[in-house]
Image 1 (cartoon, one colour):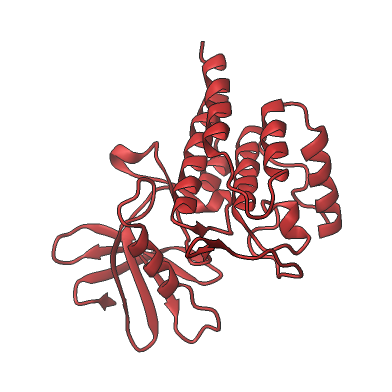
Image 2: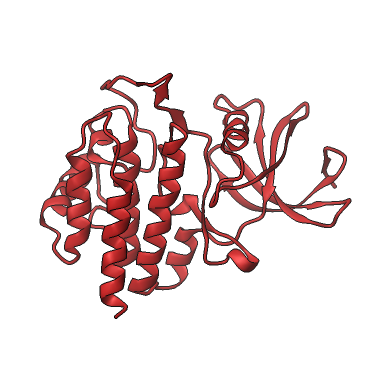
Length: 268
C-alpha cells in the first residue's frame, strides 16, 4: 500500500490522462478523502511542478482547487487536493442538461476564466473534461482544473507578442480558429473555447465532432460561427470574441450579461 508524505494513502485510480494518473486517496491521520495526482519523473513533459505553483499563486479563488500538498519521491511528483465529482463531459455523456442549467453553468465557466485572466494566466486547454463539479454542498459548482498548461500572458504590464507557426495546444474540438491557424494563444482563445463548451452543452454535439481532418474541422467551425442560427446569442458572443485583437481584454461582464439576459427571459 503506497503512502506518500507519511500520511496520504493511495487507494484506487480514478482517472488517467496524457500526463499522469489521478487516484482517490486518504489522509491516514484525519480520514479525509482526497485526490492525488501523480506523474512519472521520467516523462519528457512534466506539468505538476508548474501546476502546483499556479494553485499556490491563485490562493483561495472560488471555483479552483485548494492545494493540500505537493511533493516528490525518487520516481514520481505528487499533487494532493480536494476530491471533486464528475466532470462536465462525464455528465454530458450520461444525461441531458436543461437549457436553464446550461445557461447557469455557462455563467460559471466565463467567471472561472475571468479569474484566471485577472491573474494574468491563460488556461490554453478549455474543454468539458476540465470543468468538474464539486461534492457535498458544492455539487452545483464548477471547478476549473488541469492548470499545468497555463501560461502567463502579461509580464510587468507588457502583453506577450503575437506569433504564428505555433504547435496546437488544447483539444482540437474546442480550440479557436486562431489556434488552428498557428497563432499563439491569448485571452480571446480561452473565451472562444468556453463558448464552444457552452454550445456543446446546449446542442449535445458540435458540427465538427468526428471530422476526418483539421481542414474539414476548420471549415465546419467557420460555418458554425457565421451561419448557426438556433441560438443567435451564441453567434453574437462568438462574433464579439473573434473580432478581438490578439492582446485585447474580452468583455467578460458583457458575455455574462448575455447569458443572464437569456436566462431571465426563459425563466419568466
